[in-house]
Image (cartoon, rainbow, N blue to C red; front, side):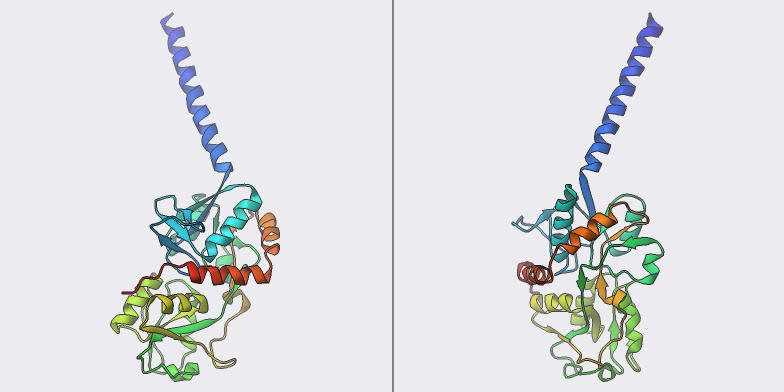
Length: 274
């Protein structure tokens, strides 16, 4: 009898474990887990207070921004609940490859190097490159890359922003930094003269910091970059069965709506003036 009782207990425990695993798998199937820095306004940011446009971050607080709005539309189109997973830039693709997240929607460009390890959706945004500087900078009157000769310029680590610095004649290419807030601090402290950014990010930095502005170059005077570098797309695991559906959802977002989403993101971003 004792053996039978023991077998029954073990069987019940196995049923409970299997049931719990089944519920976890069911819950995972109902969610769309998106990784982003939550630190790159206006594409994505972290805020303490809730708002109509904000989405809870899994680890606490709330996320807002252009990427969040795109993620919302994709999750809705897939019929899933959106979960934002705040992840450092260098950890985004590893998190995707280890199934911790389902997608990266973080202002990421579908570069040739990245396409070796992950798949990308169709682009959901295209941008232009500018250089962010202080308003009192000696380079404030620059109209071409040549005008930044001798300047101390940096970009974010492991991004094409950093590689295009080599196009500036006689530039002093500084060590790449991990985040855009870190670059802003370096700029304000005088450690660097400027950093490379996409235009929306530069607008956001200038809006939050009255001592900062940016240089936008006339056609032919700025950085040369391929379409895959200036485009931004959703990163997915290789062979993802969601790519076709996500491309279809993105195709349903008109150019006018995308532009309005960016305007809204710029208007909604938290303004922190130091």
